[in-house]
Each structure stands twice: as structure tokens, then as C-alpha cells.
Image (cartoon, rainbow, N blue to C red):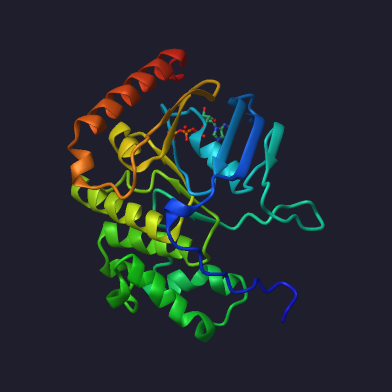
Length: 281
Ligand SMILES: Nc1ncnc2c1ncn2[C@@H]1O[C@H](COP(=O)(O)OP(=O)(O)OP(=O)(O)O)[C@@H](O)[C@H]1O
């Protein structure tokens, strides 16, 4: 085996409900000051437990993307500590993160088929295509795109492209799936459908998700916990646990309890916005 070959990723255990509540990731006293003096994050404490669907909700500029990038190792904190209690560390002190990242744009390679786009992270990890063909087809089936494996991105709708992006993030069986406003650019019908399908994957694959959104409704529907942030500087303003079981469906979406949670989240967001000075012109 080549020294830099990443081993075949193990299958995740079934049944999200059985996942133990152990912290996968801890952020302690995290601050981030950019070179131009912008304080993007100020003294943020956050722990993410296995099996959680955690959503960061907050006004523009409260540091949601900065936080997500930091978790992904794209830029370190100015002060504070990021700890991966369940991961091994390499000789340079870098944790084994095992993350999947889904951005607002699907960021697919236009000259590659759906199959090859999903193969990309495995290819970069040194896997031969033939060895992972079944795995790629399985993950495409999970997002409902098995029939489209040989199609090219230009032949897909916006929702289908986002499904490819999710498949590409899931194909490595990440410990944490990071999703930065993945459905913001989609129409409401497609967004609702993808919300439902994401929840099915979440339950079936025992995922742990950190999700960023501006939508109160989306955050309540999806999350087991919402962290509401305020801006300038970015801080945790409050938290709401959505203490409702999965699977969730239209019955939950149209229930009084969902409406009550939406009202609470909306009020918490308004408080966070009141704490945030206006954005500079
Ligand atoms: N590379 C950078 N250099 C300087 N300032 C930055 C940089 N990246 C982000 N910022 C600033 O840090 C703050 C937080 O930005 P960030 O993009 O994390 O916020 P956000 O909550 O994700 O915003 P949005 O919801 O609009 O995407 C903002 O004031 C932003 O202008």
C-alpha cells in the first residue's frame, strides 16, 4: 500500500437513534480576527456530539462560514482551541478530520460525469475506480441518482446537481457533514424535497451534521439543536434544542409544535439581530 493511501472507509453503523452522545468536536474560546482587523468570531464555545443535527442560524456576517471553514481546517483560530476528542492526530499534530463539505454552489467539474464527480474525493485519496465502483453506485442510489451516473452536470437540474454534491461529500463516510447554505439557491419545492431526503439520509446513515442557514423554518425542521449567532463580532447568542424525534415529515411541518418552535427560533434570531450592530455600508 502506498504511504499516502487512505484506507477504504468503513460502513457507518445503522440507526441514528442508537448513536451515543459523545462529543466529536469541541470548540473552546474560539476567536478569529482577520488581517484587516475584522473580529469574525469572539469567544465561541461549542461541542458537537455524534448523531446531532446542529444548525448555525444568524444574520449575515455573524461568522457562520468562518466557523465552518475553521472546523474543516481552512484557517485556524486566532485564539482558542479546537479539539477532536475521538480522532487520532498525525505526527504534525493535525487531527484526522474525516469531513464532507457541501457548499451553496454544487461546485461540480463540468467535464466529468456524475459518477466521476462523486469518485473525485476517493481518487484524491488514492483509490482505484474499479475498487470503489460499487460504493459510488450505492451512494448515488442513496441520493436517487443511480440512473444518472453517466450524465454530465449540464444535463441536470439545480436540485440534482446538489444531490451529486451531497453524494460526493458522503462517499467518504465522513464523521461530520458540513453544509454551508446548501439549499439557499433552490426553489421552495426542490428545497422541501431535499430537506426531506437529507433527513432520511441523516437517520439511515447515522450522520452528524453541521448545517448553516438563514431560514428559521428550515433550521427547525432539520435540526436537533439550533445555535443562534449574533454579528460584529460573531458570538453564540442562544441555543434551542428541537426536542422532536426523527423521522420528521409533513405531519411535523404542519404541527402546532413546529409552529411554536419556529416562533421561538424567530424571536431568538430577532434578539441576536438586535445585539448585532448594523452592517457597514
Ligand atoms: N478573509 C476575510 N478577510 C477579512 N474579513 C473576512 C474574511 N472572511 C470573512 N470576513 C468577515 O468576517 C465576518 C464573518 O464572515 P462570514 O462569512 O463567516 O459570515 P456569515 O455569517 O457566514 O455571513 P453570510 O451569512 O452572509 O454568509 C464578516 O464581517 C466578513 O466580512
